[in-house]
Length: 350
Image (cartoon, rainbow, N blue to C red; front, side, top):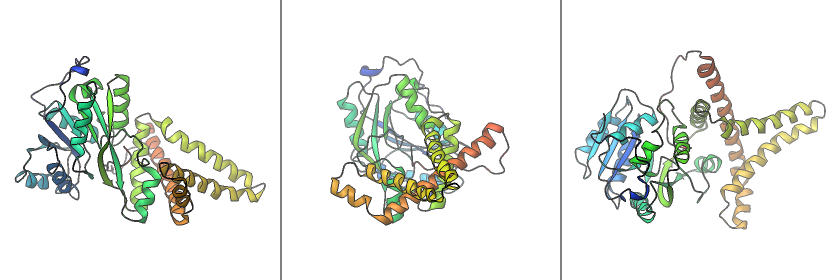
């Protein structure tokens, strides 16, 4: 569905003249989110600064997602708009939601997340402080509620306090979206990274609101983690971003392979393989605790069960990286048809 207020790319002078946010539309792209959508809608309704509307852009859910949105809409204190399409990947859902939004300022949040009560207020406050900014990036953190998810957070989420750019916590003016050329619609992931690059190329002014926090649940098992990163890796290749991910992983395992081959001539070298993997895990633990005191960083580093789990999760993510890259080569590069397509994705790792 198209907006009655069309946006064109002829907005390059919007910058400092763009009105500061007064009323904000919140856009939520969804696909098969019956487990999390009601909780997210309740959190948005309970914001200290209520959104002027919530636009839920559904890309073809086959579960009860749409039904739950309608149920919530019938009793919500905030206007809720449900935009339905037969098929839509995250980028298309965001584009459709932004097109449908009734207001010039749009906040983006992903399904599967939980914004803090003052999330929208913090984003808007940052936009009002910076008169030139057309984009405000918030912050996200993992809901690490058990040993596995705490280790997963260390393995592949930003360290506490590390600035991030994510569509899971973001406020933008519609002119910024137009200048960046909208979100790419044929990717299941990495469309947000391409969008941020386009913002940079268009020199769209941006600022950060580090206290505008959303939390999300990490994948709870090794199998689901593997599946998630397989999808991410394949789409990272499709997006042409191998230099930023796959190339580094390939370099590391080239070193590991060299050590393994050398071990056939001098077997003690094989002991270096687990050592290399442990050192990689230890480096991640050390960096993730960078803002803590030296004593607490050391304690985290010598927490052997956690170090071993982080190391193992690194290996699982690397295996998924290679498998997703293989899928890209076979199905996207060579063109071998797939028997079954994987549906949807969660917001982690944006």
